[in-house]
Image (cartoon, rainbow, N blue to C red):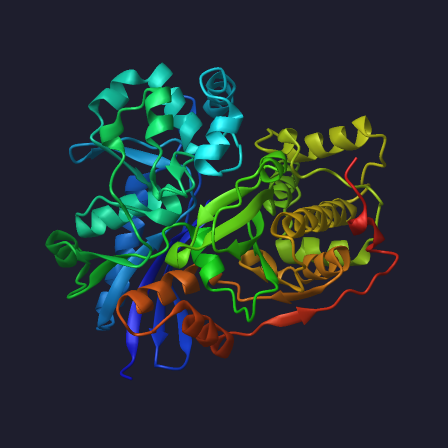
Length: 484
């Protein structure tokens, strides 16, 4: 086939990228054309997202490709879940960052209105204070005038797809992260919307993954120079896109999307909404073709990122490569933290919290950066073991292979620790799985690839995957331990 080009605007919590995907009918190649930083901005003492700057950066990426004279078939944006923009006419709100502390108060106030059992039965979504449900509940209590003016709500990637196409719709993978979407009925939960008193008109039409929204707006086309390009609501949730790109075969596999968050789970045909999945606080998010991503969110490289920021404030700048080398040279401390502990969610100083956890649980405090990194990685690997055991219990079958994808798949030490902890083969890569998933869903939407199975074959043929086998050693035994 003729070489086809697609653009993925892949937005993460630390950075955003505009990535060019080129497909020749057999293999897919990627090229990063524009990278830009991301992170919270401070607005009157709150954490927010600078969406106008992010959109300007997206347009810079589009303009760069246009200057090369490439004929781009389509563009699609993906991002993290739960956060949202409220639109009053064409005027957007400045969206809150999910780590803003407002969510904790709203979370506690929600359950007297509706029980956790009712919420889970309606949505199948795990309970986290950051969820859209509790953010909207806070808006209703503390900013009712903002909700009263709002005409629609769009999650982050869907907002940028709207800015590119002029079509305000929400793609189902992101809608399913809100804890306001019913995966059985495949519609917004009218019961929860009514019980919480949210204005029902702000919830937009939900469209399937791979929906072509329309052509690039003339104003954006003129500004960027990009012509004759369609905008696709592919898999707007970055984890959904990453899972679509897992180079898997057969059925007995699980995935771990490894980045700021570690998201571990399996694909199922229908939601697993049971008392046991509620007790384990698992989530049922929607993937391509209506599949379900039964998974658990684990705070992943976020803890290591926080330690790195803490060292920097102490005047010690370490690259991730340097920290990995230090950890490799360190022996295990046999110190295991619980990555799910709330103290690690958004601390002022991650090292202080880590040391406090060790003291309170009567464990040895890591004595060096290398030991600290090893402690964090072994603890994450232990979490993977626990959650994979729970997954197998919920689906009543054994998982033979764990696919680790995303930026964290470059951490070879963590990959090996994971293999040792879960006691089965780990396949690591590709790294840019969110962008790859974004692009292959665009290709499916445009008819260039016939199915997701065919697309995963393309991924296997196009990108390197490293295999790790369990090899228990004295250094990694701690990864099998339980958290204190």
